Amino acid sequence: MKKISRLFKEYYLFILAVVIVLAVWEWIVQSGKVPPFILPAPSGILDSLIENREMLMEDTWATLQESLLGFSISIIAGSALGIAMFFFRPIERMTYPAVLISQTIPTIALSPIFVMWFGYSIWSKVGIAVLTAFFPIVVSVYDGLNQHDKEYVDLLRSMGAKRMQIFRKVQLPMALPSIFSGLKLVAVFSVVGATIGEWLGADAGLGYYTRRMSGNLNAEAVFSAIFLLSILGMLFFVVVAIIEKRVLKWKFEREEKKHEVMG
Image (cartoon, rainbow, N blue to C red; front, side, top):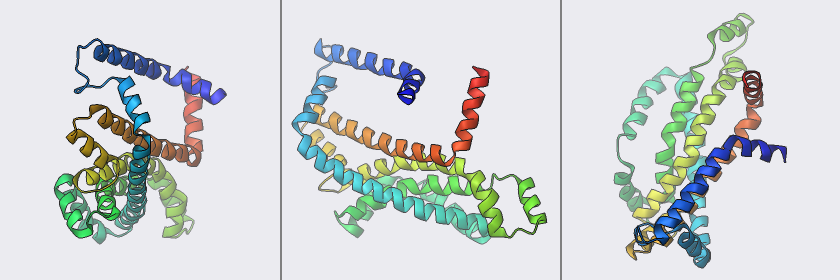
């Protein structure tokens, strides 16, 4: 109860703003100021969620699988590359420009290529999710490892510590805040990437559902799928934030004490 009370105190303004926006939104549509086929009322979106719940559950499960796979592969491959770039300068010089160049290519332009390679299977969507989420984790790992305190490194070296010992004791712990910032971005981008892949070539998923419903001019169904996509993204983000709070418990305790002193 204390945690819920604290969360409410911290975010009550956001909750109030959401309630006001939904109330005004409902009034605008119900009063006829905006036609529902352009902007459906929140009540209409809720009705669509209930009416199409079975289909939406299947499509949500498909998008969840694609996002989780893309998220996991991005973390493993991106972290490995970021660490390799940190340890080996030739790898950094060879791969860092390529990683940057990959971000200049619009993801939507590469989607048809993944469809040609993997067809309409889950892996075409996973590939787009990985492509979307790969860059933030590589950069956050590499930059985080380079932000360590050199005085601690020099101290451990003077005590005879080896490179891997320095990495485990100093460089990796100091990089964790940056890494978790990247992970929170990846959590959202993996859902975005999977949805883009579904839009361009799929037979299941929330992206495929929105494309089909938009073709039928069913605004309520489109908005209901968008709502579920935002829920998925927030769920991923919250899970990463909870893990971050447990791993970096010392950091959050220090911030809480600082707020108590200032407030």
